[in-house]
Length: 200
Length: 200
Image (cartoon, each protein chain N blue to C red):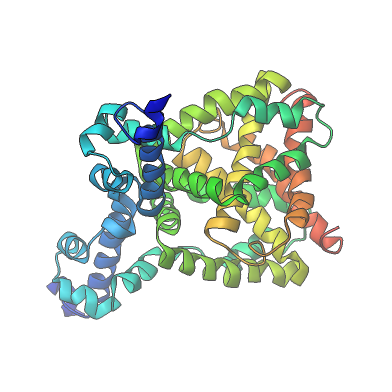
């Protein structure tokens, strides 16, 4: 236990977490291409070699830093376990609540930015969405809900882009509840349609 | 008229267009930050000073290069002039058709990429959306349709991101008509709600 007071030494979870925190800041601020291992190591007060020792490569560091701080299965359970009724509003609310939390917003924003500009980041986000996110929804609504789940998700991603990244008015300043009340029914259409047996 | 055969000389529309074409390629491939005036000038076979002479700055060049190749007023007229019925499906179809055209897709992709990573690009896209796009819709549906128009637009932007940039399956490979049939009703909800008198 005494080791913990020695601060950041190789192998300690605190060191790893410090590197991940520095990486999130760097990737979020500069994007994948412009952020450097050297700069991230400097922020975390460790040697660049240690960053590579832990994460193997810039890609590896990126994947670890950008792992979403939510568990898609738990998230889907919260939205869908009680049935489809009201799921659209619950989903709109839970998703927007993520973006209203500054630390999470910065992280998700970093992921989006990287996915738009860097193919390896897009590939890792794509795998996460196709596998875990859509897979969790399909577990509740059936296989034919995959396309509908992605369409609902695409609406949410575009909503976050317009409200939190682009900050287009009046959307950027609209109260959360007003947006939830409008977006909920659009999402609900995708879920209800799936429950009635797939596309058309 | 004979001047045209002299090729790219300062002041000719062909020179200007060659610079814009090179800029679109560079911004689309590398993003705003990494693209350079020098490289763009080289691609266009002109002197870098001429690029600055025409467009003033990298920001100015970016705005000119990223001006959307559609007129929002004409676009809104095509969707809404015949009334609200079916507008959701018409909008989904017209928007996706833009992305199915490789030259336009590259251009819009460059705009999105820049808006996510660069505040001056976000500001110019924001001004375009708040003013021209949403303004055109409000002209047909009334002022209280602004928020709903942005929500519909945010769905489309997220859809394009998921299908054409992230390429998440099954969305990326789904036939255009199947997507239009699913997305149309979600968009229609925003338009119909607006016609019935604004948010709840």
